[in-house]
Image 1 (cartoon, one colour):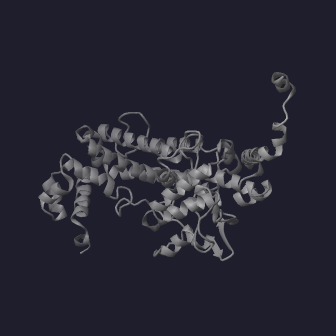
Image 2 (cartoon, helix red, strand yellow):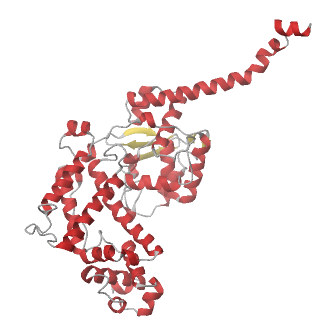
Amino acid sequence: MAAQRKSARQRLVDAAFQLFSSQGVGATTTRQVADLAGVNEVTLFRQFGSKHGLLAAVMTEAELLAGPDHRFELNPVEQVPVEQALRDFLAQCLEALDRLSELVRSVIGEAGQFSAANSQVMGRGLHAIRDFMAEYLEAVLGQTVAPGLPPEEVAGLVMALLLGSAAIDAAIGGEGDDSVEPHGLWSSRTDLIESLVSWLLSLRPQAAVDDLGAAQPSLVTDPLNTETWMDLPAPIVHQVMQVARKAGTQTYALVYVLWGAGVAAAELSLLTRASALYDSNQHILLVGPNQRQVPLNQWIMGRRYGTYTKNPLTRWLKSRSDDSPALFLGPDDQPITPLRVRQLWADVTANMISPTGAPLGLEQARATWCVEMLLKGLSRQELSLLSGLSVEQLEPLVQKAQARSALAQALRLDRQAGPIYSGLDETPNSADSADDR
């Protein structure tokens, strides 16, 4: 009965996934897929155009790593040492590749036969797998494991290594068998995993490793280089808000919190409904593991976005019908991850650039909020309590606020120059008097 409730397209994707995984794409006929799905073969071609079009759909629509037969069983990262969490994750990745070995072999071996459109779809499927891996690695290793190397790039490298190892094992022999050493590139699968674990651990900031040792990754806070943070002018801020509003209720609320409370991406993923406290006189967020209180400003860069009780965030909360306690949601009503926050920000700001000509970075929202709070009169110490940044980390932003204040003062003086100095303009200097004579 459950299968009958699925659409014909979904049944075809599920059937193709099953057959491609067990016997490969080349050995699977469209008639076999249609028969297993319980539909007419014509329906398959109408939906997907060809077998390779069907393979592209499998890569994007089938639950390659999250289905009931492939679901990972990972302990919460705060309950096991970092090293063990990584070992378990990599081992299950390789086990999934073993189960999908024929599919992997077909994807690699028949890549040259895909149309340009199918190749693009396949690329999106690989991106989805990479993002799945990045979210877990980010939870284990932190938001920024090394300068210039975000979690999605680390996940891409790990994914390439695992796919390469699976392809080599499948081509030469010894798939998942530690007793067989046909190629000598690594002595065993266990050693391969240990090498990857060592490399991943080496990417963590040394200060975090020294201070926390085997402490849990959720407690690791990577050092922030606030000297590179740039605040943004009001027109760009309001433009981002306009685009976010059109993108949907949750997106609008999330971007509103970024501008209005200066919350980091890693902190957004930890917020719950209970974190938002508001009445007619105030709207406060309880942020971070220490539940620091941060005001959610209704005035952002000179423009008001609702009231304490009726703003983008309260509208998002009131529109929800789910039972998840998370403030912002990812797929399947799970809490949004920092990676998805950054992806959402990239989507909203895709066609915008900062005054320096660079794309808008997520840290610019936090920098803009900090500078605005300083300009409104907060001291370094007060802003440190609200932002979770140290006084030292705030120093570059203090300098930017001072520069903004000096510019505003200079503009005010310029506007006052006419009436103040008008009398001097009427008195010629000695040179002018000589010329006149």
